[in-house]
Amino acid sequence: MEASLDTLSLFTGIFLWGGGFLAGFVDSIAGGGGIISLPVLLSVGIPPHQALGTNKLQGSFGSFTAAVNYTRKGLVDFKAILPGILFTALGAVLGTVAIQLLSADFLKHVIPILLAAVFLYTLFSPDMGSRESEPKMAALFFYLLVGLGLGFYDGFFGPGTGSFWTLLFVLLLGLDLKKATAHTKITNFTSNFIALSVFIIGGKVLFLAGFIMGCGQMVGAYVGSRLVIRNGVGFVRVFFLTVVAVTVARLFYVTYV
Image 1 (cartoon, helix red, strand yellow):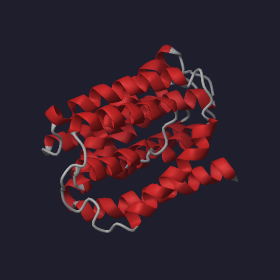
Image 2 (image 1 turned 90 degrees about the vertical axis):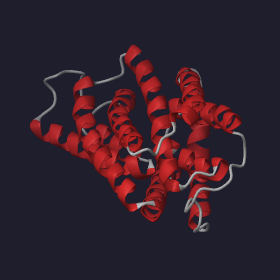
Image 3 (image 1 turned 45 degrees about the horizontal axis):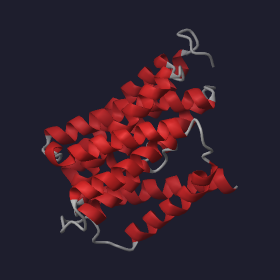
């Protein structure tokens, strides 16, 4: 598929919109929307490097919509999370530069194992995130360490970033799952936007496909975030476990099969 306004048929446009909706819905609740959106882009014939760039464009629509919705409902404390935004942005810049210089093979083999550990830990910790608890480290140090690390990872590779953020917000900062999910959307949007900017500079974004899918993302993200706001922690936990399990299965299949 070429980067042209004339290459998208009506069916392809509907397919992209639907894929964006489903990805935005899933991502706004538990992260992991990329396991849906990236295969959708590849399946319509977009080359891998352009699919990665276009995926960041459409993903930014969804993460922004979910972030706005959570903010309007009072679940985001921007004063508290500002250091996270800054360190995540810096990490994403470093990651997007590094991916052009280094091989991602090592991460491709390590990440499925780490995500499997996240899944098992959450599965066997039924009270995790059911209520807020005492933070295990100072917020500034948390954002320095985790913001730089996950910002770098999202720019460098990406799968599972939202799941890692949510888990670490709960374990290290003591947030409940609902608030952790809301804050995850802020940091996710930050790294998405930074990576998108680099892909645009490199000419790796198909804007028509990205905007069509992004429109679906916005609707899906709005619906999903509303469900989180209404249904609370138990709903998020079930969805979180489901998405992480599917992400792990797909990454293990792609990496080792």
